[in-house]
Figure 1 (cartoon, rainbow, N blue to C red):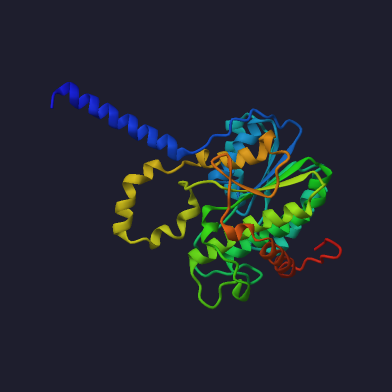
Figure 2: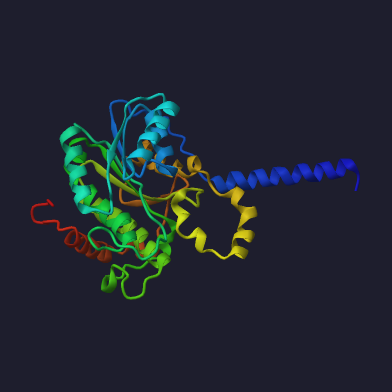
Length: 323
């Protein structure tokens, strides 16, 4: 092969790899919408896609509240968000989604201190952790990923309604496609499997979004769930050490094509700001476009049953709509 031919082949390979990487990066939110005068609350915003979402929405002029468990890391993240966005209206509040008491105290604080809440982004999560329990005795993944956000959202509904049109964005996952709501063993106590627990919690996010949309019809509050993509974040810190070495070796060459946090935040941002979604609610998105959920994510009977069970688990007095 000539030197020229070799260089041409090398260039072709590089172009192909660039194209593949760009394709893997997924959709990009093109909306130029401003959020001046609006307030956004993001759970788990001290790292990963939550922090990148905060940077983007702060750039758009929003007041951004970072709701985090680790206040040290949250304060560091807030300074980074301020620096990158040029917006100093970034607030840190303590929230531990593994504690229903913490959720209630946090929601009470927000309701008392904030005049409006235009976008609630339920972003925080835990993935494939050991068989841990929340402070209230729930399976950690179901408790944090679903129940904590279920309670938080319901506690803030009055403020969201007062601020309408407003949005609730629930970060789910493609993992919901493998999920089933195990009503007979919701806390996965009989036969714990970290992936099964995670998939159940992500399906719960989708079903919660769907049922919540129905209950909010006519209020001006819309709901969205989404798959952010496969991303290089701290979310995988529990399952990565459990992967056999040979699988890690096989995985390494492909890691360059995995989304970075900025790319992974795009669909969350899209659901929070895209104007064309104003009249859509209860649906599921991926790569900044509407996508169909797995069939179990469209089961209205299961969605209502899950709502009733969740309300019971967090001690929600449904006849009064309070907690």
